[in-house]
Image (cartoon, rainbow, N blue to C red; front, side, top):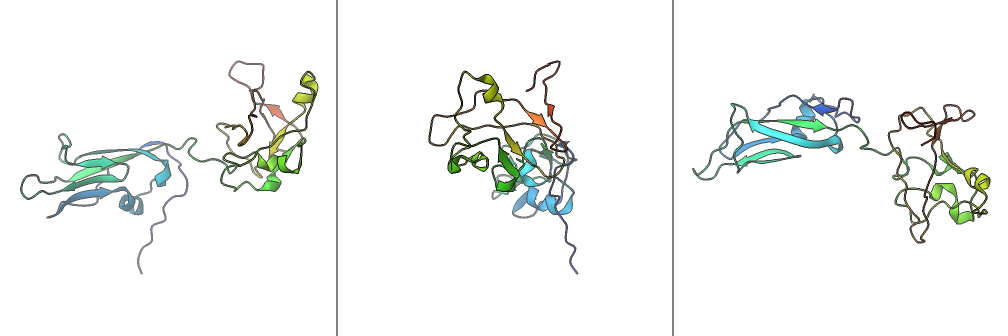
Length: 205
């Protein structure tokens, strides 16, 4: 039975791969396809690949007629005017911050998003997603009452411990409404919360 290679679904090792070479030059030319390499080598998925380098296997500079991009190296012989060498490539995997945790694509469900309050049924917490056609809007409070303002919150239950490397906010789709300042807290239990602080800072981020 044929051997099926399982392509990794996560990016575990950031940086450059080893140099790889599968194909040999033939009458038509030479190519090293990233898609084919992923079937043979344990590499990161394509959406983590941010750069590819190509070089002749025997050394020397890469010719101008060779295409080298994130799809691989591609070269076509040209009726005796140019002949392709044997090429090898390596890929760069950038693991950090390539995938969201689910607030944009919907993998975080509505019931995982709660908020301290909302102005109307159309302003609930789960509308506060990136690329949403609406937004989360808290209840109206006195703008001079800072205590009331800081008591408003939106909470995302990730259902398991995950690494968070950044937060992106976005203004309301229709109205000139956006967040100007916020603090970030994290919790493992939902009962005790800790501020996320900047380096050498006593204030929450």
